[in-house]
Image (cartoon, rainbow, N blue to C red; front, side, top):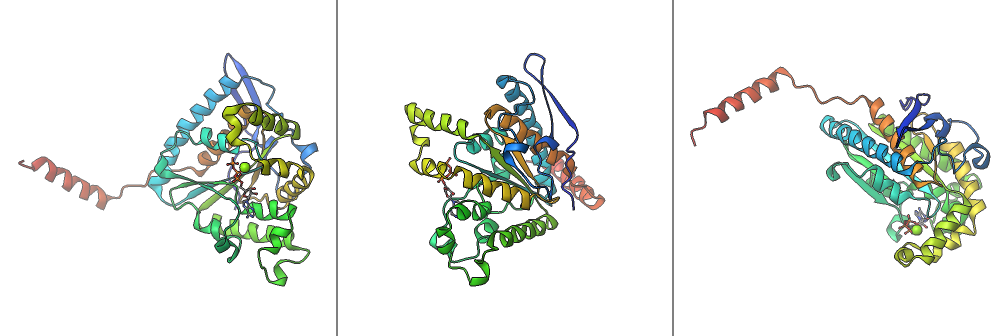
Amino acid sequence: MKIEVDLDKKREIEVGDGGRVKFRLRDIAVEPGSKVNLKKDFDPDFTGGYEDKAGALEHVAKNVERLSAMQETLYAQDIYSVLFIFQAMDAAGKDGAIRHVMSGINPQGCQVTSFKAPSADDLDHDYLRRASVALPGRGMIGIFNRSYYEEVLVVRVHPELLVKQKLPPQARGKDVWEKRYKEINNFEKYLRRNGTIVVKFFLNVSKEEQKKRFLARIDEPDKNWKFSPADFAERKHWDDYQGAFEDMLSNTSTDWAPWFVIPADNKWFARLAISEVVTAVFEKLNLKMPEVDDARKAELALIRAELLAEKD
Ligand code: ATP
Ligand code: MG
């Protein structure tokens, strides 16, 4: 049950005045079963050798138009749903990327869910429940801004959060993370079999770039609202988070629900890369408008005749 995306197709994208961005989706995909070393394997500053923000965003806009048409077919077909998951350190650009890449989509066909710290009610249930109830229905695109992956990220970096979950002993032993990876992989396989395609993005921002963005949020009054001291506190755990991300990527990138590591130091390139993955996923779904059978055609012809025959 492979996720059908052509990873090796060259993405030679014309942007701006004849400039070209070159990359393959394979450059940013996490090979299932591989052991990820973020520093060595993925450069947050990668831009496919090109530096034209405006041109790239024009290309994103074109992708959005195509996506909008494909989404309409997804909705009409009413069989599959597509779930895009976004995870990242603070200020990596999740919100902006979601806004740009999904901007042209019919709001009725798309639903964004942001996952914050769990409520008392959430903590009274298994950790996948709140994600389950937020899953996109058939024909819909769902976006998770953070997700159940926080359960192997923030909860791993802050073990006291695990204590709050009141788990039975077999679910909080030393191998808790290994177990959770397996549970998540099985959950996503189950979703895939039942018509939900899950594709995951980790926005890979560097520590230096996060510092720049935090400083901008402090120095520019318009951006003050975006800054939270809690984000600064999490930065102090940077290395622990990188380790947790590496382990998550190594253990949960699967044929049926792959991870893509999006270079995120340049927002324009992050948006371009995400929109290329999103359109590639839809293209391979090979969506078709539902077939109209003879009985339905006859019914429509009859109604048409009646409409034309109406007197007033
Ligand atoms: P923004 O700051 O751009 O509005 P955000 O995603 O950072 O978006 P916040 O409200 O700042 O939103 O942060 C949400 C917080 O909730 C994060 O610190 C995250 O780690 C935490 N969180 C999410 N899921 C869980 C979970 N399952 N267990 C514990 N904490 C979680
Ligand atoms: Mg935040």
